[in-house]
Length: 442
Image (cartoon, rainbow, N blue to C red):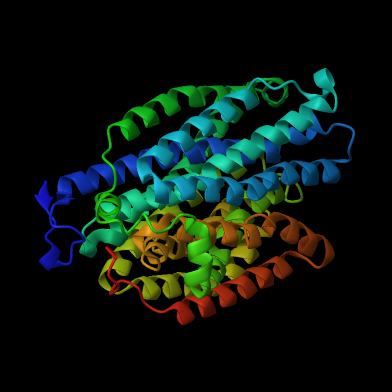
């Protein structure tokens, strides 16, 4: 390690500055850990879309059962801000590393328990009640995960690579989606649907035990964030006894605008990968295997957009990268819908990937953009409040809004909804301005 010198802008002359190798190692660990947590989170969402209606809500009509399954997904978005703010409080007061280990443990245990839940046929109303409880715990865990992973990666990164390295935490979100989809696709291709629905759906939940052990080993080997340690030594972080209260008092405008900025990414992601998956296997009558293949390919397009945009964010600015991503969404949303609505499995995959690419572009700079808005003492709480607020206004309600609009008007109304939230987010980003010039070690 080299040392940050106060004359060079560092917070404490005795604070060790991470080497490039250490920064890369932390970014990789953030990627692996986030991948595992979001694998667990998305394996639930995908299985709820494909299985839970029949297993936990068999007395309902198919449409009502689908809505009930979506409701169990949405429960996590109630839990996410609760868990997020709890983890953020301790992340700002105790440290980023401790909260990341705790969130991974909580996610792993709740996911494995879903894999052994009794169904409605066995336990009656108790079965969906337990399902909702475990989804709540999943939501609480993932609510604390994103902020900690982003901060560990960004606070270890040198200024010129901060967007690229911190974006690996976001890359883990997409990798978790791809991994969960690949597992479901493999099971779909190898196992008859009747057997899958009966009991094989449990195996992906149980297999997460191995992934959790891998993630824990990697996280236990990490050092605490050097910027956080510097703030703790100097006493800068000691003043925030209740970090979220400090954020809302001193940075209210930033929280509100950042929340609105995040709505598009969260809403469009869930329209693409939850609503459209259900739409494909339902009204479009595309096979489950073909629909999952489309999601897997689209996750690849999303990841490519994310990596390209992270480079733009470091060289041209965070706001520029975000606005380019939003502009891309506005350009492709209606052509994507036209391709999807043909009902062709191939064109469905093309349309979904076309939409996913600019959403990935918009997601890449979000983490570092939010982190640079807040000082070290309240950074975890600030970015978590914005992230979870945007998720509540976007992802939590997006599948329901999409279903309602499609049922009442048609798929192009869903496109209009995406356009509306994108314009709102673009306006919020414009109002926030650029952040890469701000002192990150304040």
